[in-house]
Image (cartoon, rainbow, N blue to C red; front, side, top):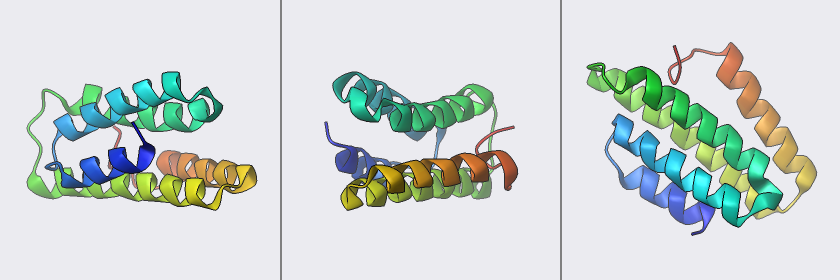
Length: 111
């Protein structure tokens, strides 16, 4: 499994909690397969899992589901771009940026 394939598949899935389960499971697999980037995958795993656990049994409006999927798609794209640059510093900067945004910006993905 390659990260870019995960991103492509996520973008094809509907905006629902099942798409976050897909990210969670994919990141778990990638953590085991590519331990060099485990911290990156763990960040995405944690965000996906938090979203799924919090919203799995709740009815969500379509606008909210689309916003959550869009936010995750943005994070995945940022990481994919960082992987393509092949710079550890860039990858670290990107994960730092995502972490800061996730905890300080509008929290669509978490409660």
